[in-house]
Length: 538
Ligand code: CA
View 1 (tube, rainbow, N blue to C red):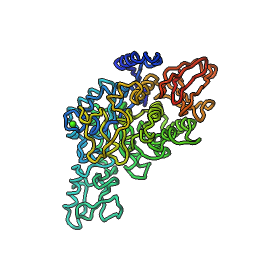
View 2: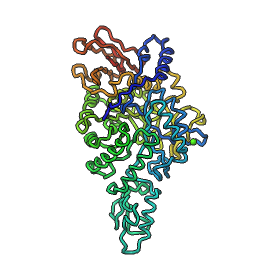
View 3: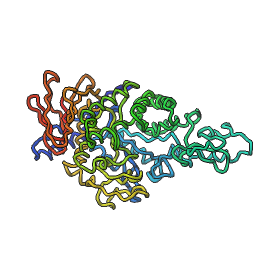
View 4: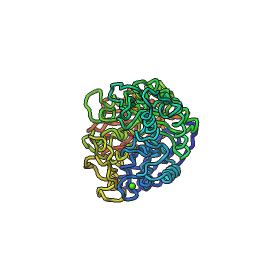
């Protein structure tokens, strides 16, 4: 299915921005020449995505709650960083601040704006070649959703001994209702009746019943509604819980959903959250869904954190390179054109800067370890400036740190139950002006990804003869071309790597990253890599 359309779209605006940046950097020795290379972004589903929690992102109207107009006002910021995809966390009406319990699947949360605002956002994204995907929460609805409230009212209206029927109340079969207390803590009583409903997360999130064909039809209509609004696909929440613990049945639901979405728009992008081990989430690719989040590499105990902060042989550059191949092989076993979805943290995880004890060099180095991976890569808003946030969920969803002035235009208040967050690194406003900031390092990393289509789309192989404790050496092959990535993960030492022309062909440095600003060079066949640097050779 992938690569049907190979429309090449040259981003001249970005290119100009790059030239301007390069111009401003020539004073530091002209080492930034690679940044002025042409950027050619392929319009497919191997993208670089920015995950936005609208509530905490940017406020446009002064009520200090983020909104869709706020997102529109920051599209320049997002585009300038090089992103060409946006995942919006739920934007449909909901009683909770996070909105993962939907009351109405065809409306916009009033705090966030109107349907007209959404249409404007979709059109603005389209203009910029940014694909917009929505968080689709299908495992459960809000207990305030009319389907649920009507079903409960119906059950409460039954006379003693009267059996419920879906013919009288179709919504009765949309959820898991049983008579008699199942005696487990995921079941809740309907009023004072003998009926109970399932809510795996909590009582406010009743689980839906995918056995109901009428419910599936509702979801098909909802998908149609949003695709018509210009949405480019969906992020699917909690797919493991459709039938908790039953991977095969979950794959069946996802197969139905994916087939339906692709029948309407073959280019739509679908990414699922199956929060589990690699061995389990890989199986979900059998559904045909393009991507599943790569939990193997993410979070405080994932491969990236281990590589940068743990010690010992198993957490070496060698282990990192092996893990790249392990994930690729595991997911391709279930689907040949599986698109990995690497990410470092999301809204359910503590911010990554904390994993690194706010060591700026490591916070920077984590960017290429995630963003130079093959697949469709995701960045949670604020990671590009090393934001702070851990502990309760609200803390992980803190206001985007645009400015150190909490009252500045666009700044939000954040979730009401959030504990005060002290950011350790400067605001976006300051970091954008600093070529050595975390922001600039992220921007350079995404630029490398955009300049070299093989980085996102390539099949990875490990160069065993080079890879060791400190150097991860890999090749990426796509569309008949092979490029090489050399990553120096030594915290202190410069390394030299010989890339013989006889073995690898005539290569030159197509671009590089270096956390301390030192130069990566190639002389004869020897590449010199400062501590914590990456070279792309082609
Ligand atoms: Ca607002």
